[in-house]
Image (tube, rainbow, N blue to C red; front, side, top):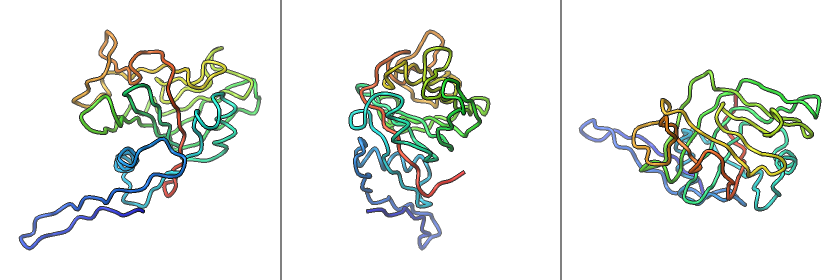
Length: 214
């Protein structure tokens, strides 16, 4: 079930925002109905955007190749990461563009923004970053980034210390943080969305954004 929210004008000319009826998450997702609805709201989902779950570590395997096999050339993508009470992730307006050489890596420009669904703010929150960090780096199936990670998203999120994709490193610069952040920080005020700089995610999910293109 999918409905949209509307803005109506009352008898005295005031705008009334009608709350969206709760939506149903896609099949095989880890997202609850409220998490799914919150994520769509952050994406501006009144334009008919929907998400399809392509990959989950607990279902499809925990290696980089498992992720690549499940995601294929789909785009745009949303990565959802769970670690304890924390639920967060990143939107990329592109796909996973592998290098021609499977032992090499590929860096390319891509619109990127982060989000928190639980554990960091009083409500689900979008985290915008500077355009200088709007890029993705992915390794080939037989390669890695600087000898250790499989992917870097937005300059501050690393996935996949070989061979397990759930091995992550992440920090968000303090200048990007909206007001109200209550999660863990480093000594410079940067946000550890996973609770620490390096962590093993409980679950990583990748979803395909349908109805939203470059």
